[in-house]
Image (cartoon, rainbow, N blue to C red; front, side, top):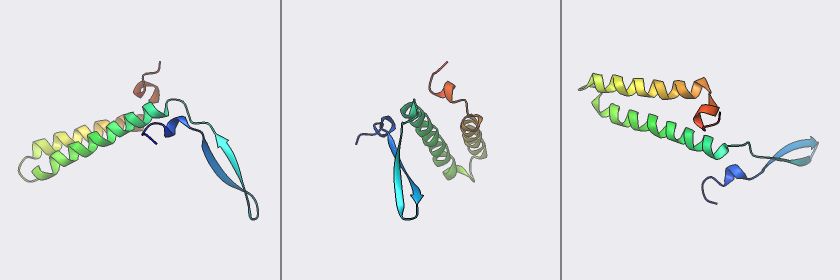
Length: 91
């Protein structure tokens, strides 16, 4: 299944109904899951890249390391603020 299709499909949740019995419930995918997944993927890749660029310079370029940490902090703060509608372009 190509990436992104999973967000468009319904999901099946298994929940115990009674001892030894499991019922399935269909749950519709939340709207904009593909866009949200892509945004979060971009954040993770950005943090990963900033760290990869900074680690080799821990001893010889503290300014570069500090800039990378600030970039990571900014990206993670964006996620923690939780303004999803801004990330996926909804008004």
